Length: 112
Length: 115
Figure 1: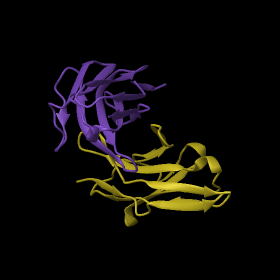
Figure 2: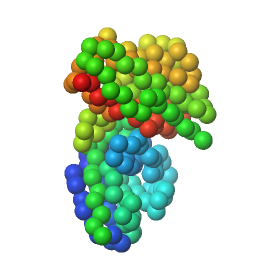
Figure 3: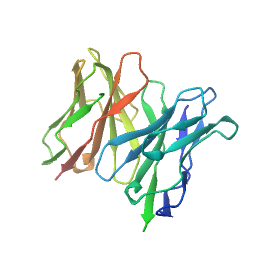
Figure 4: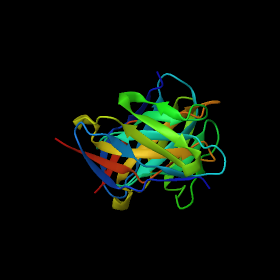
């Protein structure tokens, strides 16, 4: 069955520093992969998605992610973090019913 | 485009009562809607999948008689929590998907507190 794993529960970075959030997927074929961001008490906002093609995907708010089949990874990156990026980030993959299967999330804190 | 609304955004109810949550796709026709539940500081877990005009498919462990889902039109799905108990307190999020699309659009969520 498809699944995604986010190994980091909580990450703290300084404002202006670079960011990488890890996501590993488990699926034989090419998976559909997504990154979402959730601010406290809010719904989900799609940052970017990968279906096929170019393995480096550009998203909103300056985020990008790279699909690496050899490492079964789809890590989210941002070159310079802003305080407003503090939130919960979820990696997700497509389920058999067209639903999304989410990782457990990584909470990002940003130090001033 | 692709806006999904939920109503209410938050609700407090007494134990034993029922609560209805609406999920609407405002600018597209949603042939499939999904209902997720998110407990505090946890991830989203799929509760059920509903296709317009047919019965919902529930995930294992989700009581279909307790969480009634209706998807009567291409723009509206409702989740009714019947005989709510404090353990049903959670954040309920719906998403909607158009026909022939893998992309889902999420509603802003409904915070349910059962006292």
